[in-house]
View 1: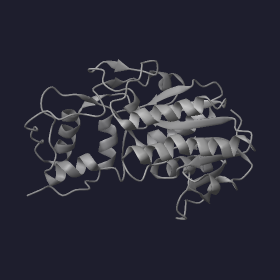
View 2: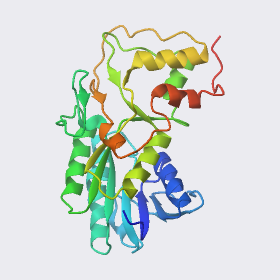
View 3: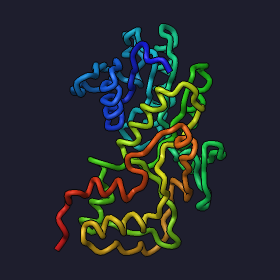
View 4: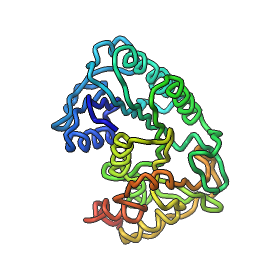
Length: 288
């Protein structure tokens, strides 16, 4: 795909900033849109705007030809998700389509749209039946984008981890980790560096499908992941919860076959490679 014009990253948090650095390193012009005026890395031009307020989007630069939409809601509730994803993507589309030639729009959605599949393999063609409001509203946002008529890609991302995203490590280190009661459900994840690299890869792809799963090669149970982390830290594995708890993400194994078929290579193809990079050298002292 042509790289003429600039790329607008709408939502310059962790993954968005990593993506911007990758694009700038290959000589592309990059705008990073965020609500705050916090500085961005060299090579990225900051834009201060609020996706929930269309008035702040009226002065966007007119050389944007590619967009990656990946904002993070300030609260985990339906109102925040609707305002940012459903309304926000509409506001941005209205601001862009009227004035600019957008050749590609990538929306970073979530594997939460799939719901429960009892441990079965899931791919881009699997019907969606989300279990919670976040998946439902992300599906609404996906539909809003597809109705725009733009060349759109939906990138459904699994659980992110990596530097600064060490929740499981912290739980093992401080002794608060607990295994879900009952049979071990599958979990799915992708390292933040691979997520950013996959988005850069899809932006540049000439012939792309309209949906990709961004997830690594190895769905794993939480017991597997906790066990690996505990071994690396020299700590015992966590005890089980006393009773099963309701889950909002469902039990499924996500397939990255379509992404792999584009020629994308993972730096961290499974959780062992990814967590080993975070845990070397050790970042947490063993508990007494």
